[in-house]
Image 1 (cartoon, one colour):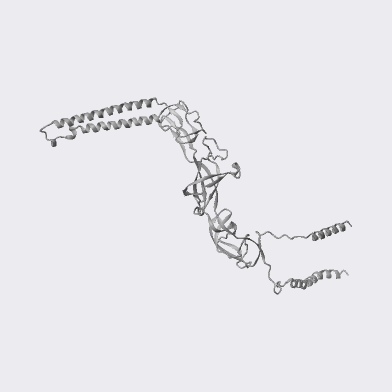
Image 2 (image 1 turned 90 degrees about the horizontal axis):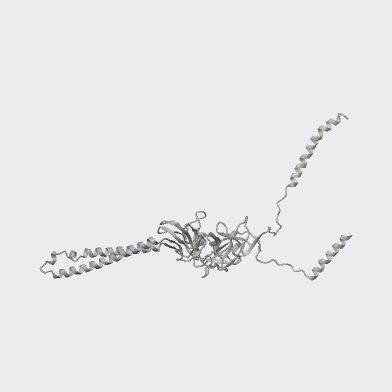
Length: 420
């Protein structure tokens, strides 16, 4: 018995190997499956796709942009004469609104008044000298007429008639007049006034200050008009209608339904350095919403410098155009459609305008075409599909009263069985 046991132990692995070989071959043969054959007259399962009806009509292209408000005119008011400041307007402080011509400050004018009087006196003297010279010329003409036996051709008539002296007197009179005008202007410049209606941004002087020519006194900004720059793509520039007012909104501050307008000024000559878009300059009239009494209109929100505004620009109307979603357009300017035969087709289009969400195009669609509203994935022209139009509401099955009663009865029976 002891001699047989080792022999059995050695033969068991060999027997297992011999048995496993035909078993493995059988399993391999049984694992070979024939390719499924479609039943006679059967068709492969069709791919389900989502489609929408193509919409056509007239549209007004719009472009949503934004921009920062800046001043139309910002001026540093400088002193044009030197002297001591004797008066400063009490309301001339930062933030104050002043009309054109209102006094800002006054420079001591005593020296300029005296200078004007001196020049006026010299003007009187020059006028008197001219009158005397004219009288002398008349006398010279009379004396020349009394001379007999003198060759008139040999005389220097101009000198005899004192014409050079008369010209000198006239020139002195002109100089005196110019000096009087200069003195008058200098005197006027002692009054420093507003060059336009505006608000004071900063003030650099006070009463008693000593100023010289070109000393900086005030910084003011024109409040009649503010400017704002917006950017538009070059493709929209050809559609942009500069005659239509741009619509300004600031929903978080003004509310959803409150708007203001801006008018077109010009297309700036340089592109934006970052995105290469075109810059358009707009003007906002009466930005602070001031009425005739310079009080802010409660029904029109004010706009300030450095305000960040949302702006909508309008283009010229595009008639008889198709409107498609941005993600429908392929790289080769085509879109996928499902035709009347429920097969995928490509239609090439001409892009008229691209907005952020929609694209306006011209295309030769065929009756029955519906746009593919999803990514085509792996697709080919002519592929048969089963379309589902997501624009059309699904039909809801109407359940009759008898059917409701039957359903309720079955539910009751199931509840009763559950008790036992």
